[in-house]
Image 1 (cartoon, rainbow over the protein chains, first blue to last red):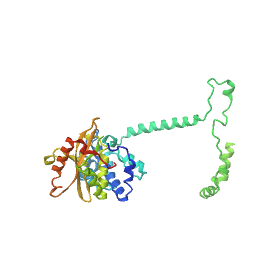
Image 2: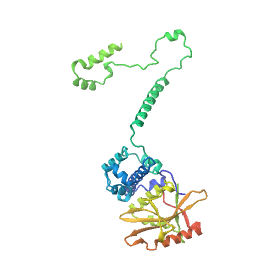
Image 3: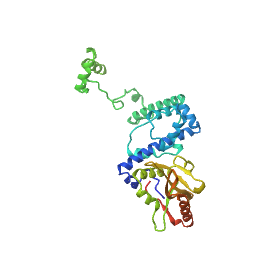
Amino acid sequence: MTSQSLYSEAFVEELADDEEREELVADQVRTRIALQIRALREQPEREWSQTELGRQAEKPQSVISRIENIEAGKGLTLQTLLDIGAGFGLPLLVEYVEWEEWFDRMYRVAAKDLRRRSFDLADLKALAQENQKTTTTDALKAFFAGVPEQKASPSAQDAARPLDGSLLPRMRFGSDQIEPSLRAANDAEMPPSNRSEDAFSSVAGTAA
Amino acid sequence: MPSFRSYVDQDGTDVIRQWFDRATKQARAKFRNKLRNLARLPRNEWRRPLYDTLGEECAGLSEIRFDANNVPWRPLGFFQTDREGDDIFVLVICASKDEHGWIPRNACTLGLRRKAEILADPTRAHDLPIPL
């Protein structure tokens, strides 16, 4: 059987030729765009015709047809891709990547790998809330990972003892922590009352 | 996912590899890339613009579709199933098209004859010797 791996050594060797490599990249960019637009259009939640996508993206059906026909999609512009994205309610990501990432991502071309959900405010808000909870939990976990194990039933003496420095990170606000050139630049921007000697000695004094 | 095999003539020459070695760089790159994509698609997603089944004089064959240097290339082949039940696409000829039809003109007849040879003698096809 022919190898199905993402990129075999033999395959990579054949990319040594600049012209062949550039042709392959260009062809795959066009191919994946064509396949994804069709997959998004035919996604069960949409089941749009090319005409319907054209209506949503404010493009004639012939433009959609040309893009989906890989060989005819050579004049495709970034603006057209943005317009089609807007028609689907989807953001566009265009970036240069490392080769291994390119191989990994660009050949995921089965319809199930190309489908995406349209913009949904309620859905994104729920995700944002979930993300915030996870971030807070992770931060607490990271903080307590460094805390020595506590006794199950602390004695009255333990409970009365104030937190010592092993539990909390020491923070210094002294002006000696600031790189001199940065401090000078900062001072030039600030009114006299905010300059480093005043500001940092004030904070350091409070901390002490 | 499907994989690829290719026709070997009586002299032991792999006709697909022979075509590939003589092809332009753009044709080589696009041929490999189309196969690379198809190898990652379930068979029910093999359709235009990458692939199409043929009728009339070519009934029994399918084509892989790509253009290179303004030539519409159409490698022809057919599906088989291996012992494990996996799909294999067997390439029999790398034909192209012009305003008058197939190049070579007997591409379909030749392709169907090669298909019959492979069906009668499975050793007339082997794993495609082109890395994908």
